[in-house]
Length: 175
Image 1 (spheres, rainbow, N blue to C red):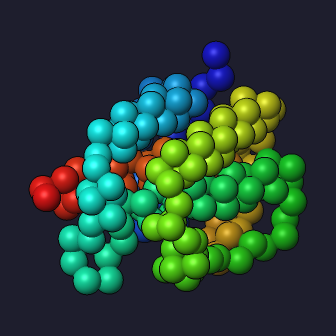
Image 2: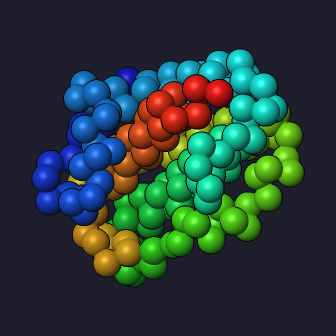
């Protein structure tokens, strides 16, 4: 079983601590990614379409938009991890999450379509990290102006998802 340790301070930008501290410190990151996927599916399939389209305040995303945002973010962070794992030192740009969400078409999609994509991306992410040589997890690169290790990117994916699950539970499930 592949273990991926949590990154140390300095392996990720300061803002990302909010994601890192949500990930258990047991090295079982890939198991957590698998479990999180099942938790997301169970939660989302229990919701009505009205709940999936709810915005708790003007300008906030719907749950469908949050899900597609998680998928977009995971794709981007896995791509960054691949580049840096292969020791590509090309500086990678950031992305504007609000633009991505606004142009995602998430609210016009069926929840089954979104969950199908979510699962496909998650499986690809897990396969990527399972196949990397151990030394690749400590390789670094620069993305969005910040130096980051491959293991920090992997942990970001899991923590970012947990962050949004917490927001869904706290702000969206009160309707």
